[in-house]
Amino acid sequence: MQIPTPLQSPSLLEQQHPSGSGAGHLLSTLKTYKYAENRAPVLEVMDIQKRFDQFQALNHINLDVQAGEFVSFLGPSGCGKTTLLRIIAGLEQPDYGKVIKKGVDITRQQAEKRRCGIVFQNYALFPNLTVKENIAFGLSKNQWSSAERDERVHLLLDLIELPDIAGKYPNQLSGGQQQRVALARAIAPKPDVLLLDEPLSALDAQVRLNVRQKIRSIQQQFDLPTIMVTHDQEEALSISDRVVVMNHGVIEQIDSPHNIYYKPQTSFVARFIGSMNFLDAVCQQPHQLDILGSMSLNFPQQNLQVGQHYTLGFRPESVMIVEEAAADEQFLYMPVQVKSSEFLGAKRRLFCEIELENMPSADVPTLQIEIENAQSAQIQTQMLIRVAHPLIHIFDEQGRALC
Image 1: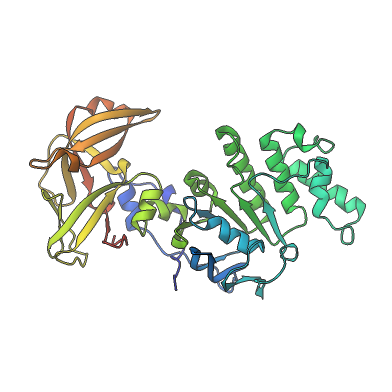
Image 2: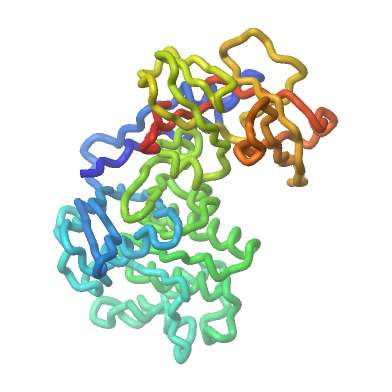
């Protein structure tokens, strides 16, 4: 059974670090986060499996969602994230496993009885109903009086900052306005859990930014447990308490956005989240890796197996440009040749090739380096770069992180 990674503290980014320590200090200070005692999860997914004909969509999925928590399912197309959301919503049935909400097994319960608010990718507003009627659609007349329904609708219209559109129809609204109305309709009946199926994918960049911040603000205001499906890593990392990274129907890692980025537990997570440079290495001696057959680096704390192949990874922003190599085993030095660059505003991205003797040009890896634009005077065609030891990740042949 796959056991999710413990949630770890996301607040370390806010710490101040001495010059030169940066992310390395962050990695060294990671701590395991513990939930408050006696705090039961609102939602539990237990060993869910789902197959469509010969395709295994979900394989031994286990996770939980705490009260007031915002969790994102992140992964490439076809990884199973939408299928998992639909199983939680009751729109699909699992082949095996359980869905528990507030201690009650709802695995076979009908979708309309699960008290889950759902916002679909295409909004799914009723075109023949006004905004007011759309929002009030889920407010049962048996449980809500006419006055209570009106009060609830106006409260939500104020909350989504669209107080004057109650009488309009969906086709009179922009995409961003329709999405906010769909959100208001989903939370109108006071659901136990809010489910968002790629809610921002149809919006342009600036509208996406505004709407996602509004979703997060409303979610926090109502203290509403929320699950969002997305393939956009920026969306997931920016507003989530935890991120569930999925690939080929399994969970690769469950963690805070901070730790997903700085401490990926598999090479897939490292590659999928942000940018990562990878170098092939082999263990020729205990605790030592030979990199590309030309460089060596010691890892005294790692139990490396002689003869085994490994992969080293480091982020583009972990690279420093230096004038000369020092006799210091805490750094990996590499001579590179700059092939091209991209202007990114405050930063500049360089694409470089490692210059090693006797290596076929087809085998030379291309590295990405990101530097502050203020350092652009340091850029030359041929340079020496270094990466600090604590910023290097090691992955074994199965793609599992060792450090």
